[in-house]
Length: 226
Image (cartoon, rainbow, N blue to C red; front, side, top):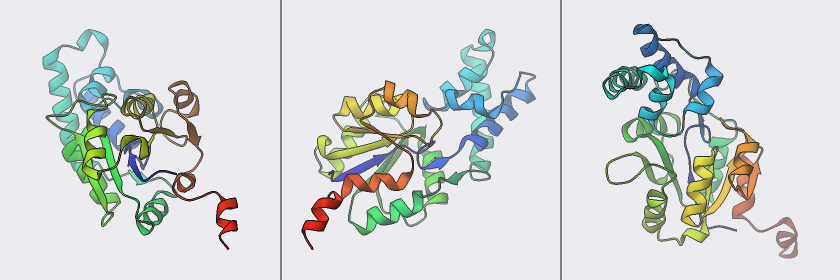
């Protein structure tokens, strides 16, 4: 049983891969660089937009100026089209509603640029009562550094060990473990169960609604109360 939850965004609450891939491939293609199949982006995302573009560029073209040029073009495209194909995973909206009804504090921590994170969350989950929605922003290092996760725990006034952290990558599991939070894997996400288990996930879920098990007593305890 935990008192609150922090969610990753991309690959955990939302399937954002197609819109991300389209934006980066578009910028690459306009400059004559090879583009990548959709599945290749599963391993490229997760460390922020600049690193995504760096990974997508040919190694010989990864100088600072070229990375920044492609990043700026891809980010502008993505900002305009970040909700074209992006969808919440099945069961996520029901999960958020159930947690909110139960009074469980919720937050989102992403390595997506902060403004884009806010835009996607606002478009997919309007009215959802997140205590904090934070993307990559000045003042806090990117995950897996635990500083942002710990700051969110402090904002919630909940000890880190009472927090569940749900994410779909080794970055998320390492963040959770470094922060002293429960590292729970989203097995439906971009990376898959093997990576999550190797990174120390305490449990890998098959569907979002399974997370509710961490916020209610076991069935045997509930039965004893009736």
